[in-house]
Amino acid sequence: MLLKPLLAISLGWLLLAGPAAAATPAPEGAEAYIISPADGAVVSSPVTVRFGLRGMGVAPAGTVNEKTGHHHLLIDLDGLPDMAMPIPSDAHHKHFGGGQTEASIELSPGTHTLQLLLGDLAHMPHVPPIVSEKITITVK
Ligand SMILES: [Cu+2]
Image 1 (cartoon, rainbow, N blue to C red):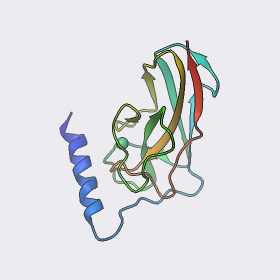
Image 2: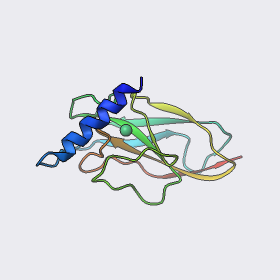
Image 3: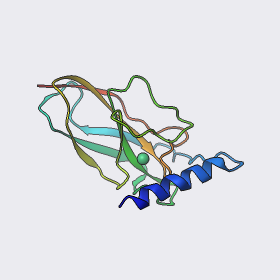
Image 4: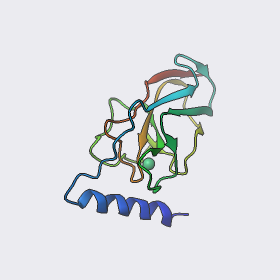
């Protein structure tokens, strides 16, 4: 299970090291959005977050198909990550490289922000980036 993501990451670095920028173009009109929870919702943890995508397909990381990508959930992140780099993997950047379209997230009581950012086969944002509106929720 560990080898596959590692291979995908290595492939990403190889592509990045190439002479031409290996950016995946975003199909025109492609859009990511959070289906639920709603902006401003008051919820309890764990929170089920449903990921929406229109204009392209969801595919596992490593899938070679330009019109696909996988979701990343940005949690309590100020601004956006560097769009010229693979999306980081930490508490503020969750990868769903299996092609998941929903996730159950543990959040502490209080206010949190959630935002989706699509990544290509090598976890790079598309050009232009496919990023959802940022929502704010309150966890009881
Ligand atoms: Cu990723």
